[in-house]
Image (cartoon, rainbow, N blue to C red; front, side):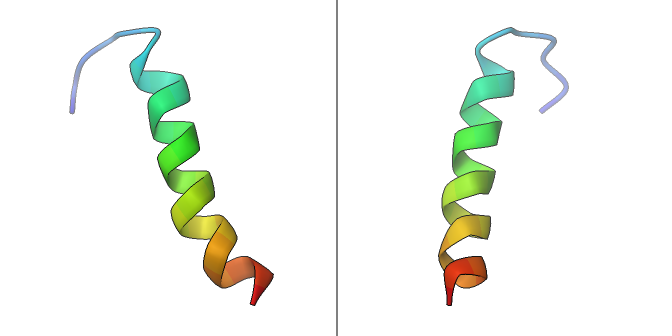
Length: 26
C-alpha cells in the first residue's frame, strides 16, 4: 500500500470513486 507508483494513484481513485460513488448516488 506504500508504493509510490503513478499507477497506484489513478487506480485508487477509480476504486474509491466506484465504492464512494455508488452509495453517494443513492
